[in-house]
Image (cartoon, rainbow, N blue to C red; front, side, top):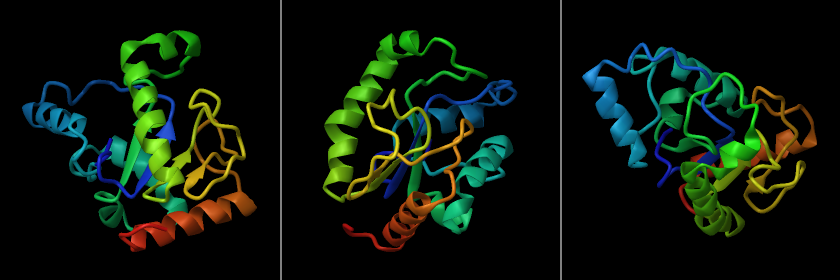
Length: 175
């Protein structure tokens, strides 16, 4: 979700939460979903999808940035592309072709970009499945302690992540 190909900051999660599919019949929403899969579409506004906006803005509140500012600079990436209330069989999730493609791209492209300081990547859920160690820090690759809901625990690492993200969002070149 969001401009994954160009975002300064990418937040990693496990899978999208439950979705009632209420907007699936809307041609406008279907077209938006297709554009989002291209990796350039900005994060949704409250008018695009209020539930998604509420979820995303709550996860990014720690960065003290206006959602309109974040929409073109931040993206969310899930291992699993499918909505679910709870992922009980992570081993099966990891074997899905879409999950394999995601993990391959992350390891070949996204993580090296973060290690080089080209963009910031913060693992907000399931560090082990992303092949990261909880508490891991790097130049711009972080795996802070998080809650099951995808919020960072308070402490020194959170302060470091927040400061790095805020600095990077405000500066369009490398850290």
